Amino acid sequence: MASSTTIEVLRYDERYREPSMEVLRKSFFQQEIVCIGSEVNLTPQAQKDLEQLCLDVADGGVSLIARDTTTDTIVGVSFNVLQTPSGPEDANYFEQFRDTKCTTESSRALMQYMITMDAKVNLFERFNVRCLLEVMFLATLPEYAGHGIATRLVRESVQLAEQLKSGKVAPTGADGSGTFAKPQLVSALFTSRISQRVGEKVGFVVINQVPHSEFVYKGKTFSDRAGPEHPFSTLVVKHL
Image (tube, rainbow, N blue to C red; front, top):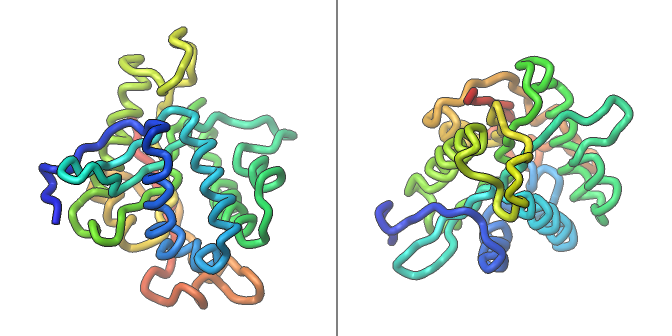
């Protein structure tokens, strides 16, 4: 098994597309609480929809991956997205994806969960910011769990946000003009005790906590399907 010294975190690159999707297929889509709650774990087409979401997000150039250097295996992913406020009449990024790219009720339900959680607290107004980096999907290969890989991915996502804010780096594939939106805040929705502990370690602050019993898909709450071990989601932030 890999030691932490053999794991490197790097910016997502198109050549790692397929192994990055494999991490989602083997880990996130099967084990993540909201994926279970909305039956993404049972719906291959919903998984394909959400792979497309991650590929679209990856094009934004602020996602990270973890690689085991001894085997050249991608063992963890953090699909991150720079968010800016949408106008009062405009659909935000997740709403647009739900309405135009989702082909299953299951993937729509997962997107709706993110939309509902985001709508409960307007982070842009609350903290008077114009741009934030959201850690959207975080996953580690099951056989690499327990090695602090998710914590490193989140910690380095915060460092990336700091470097973007200062202008030291740009999103991958940016035109070089330096005109990209610069994040002032990092946010995440953490759905399990495991990811919530990661957030605590990296210094995130809980802004909102919502029970999974509040979300219903096909007559069952997310809690009904996912069980009592991970009873709520948290919206967390870290200031830059």
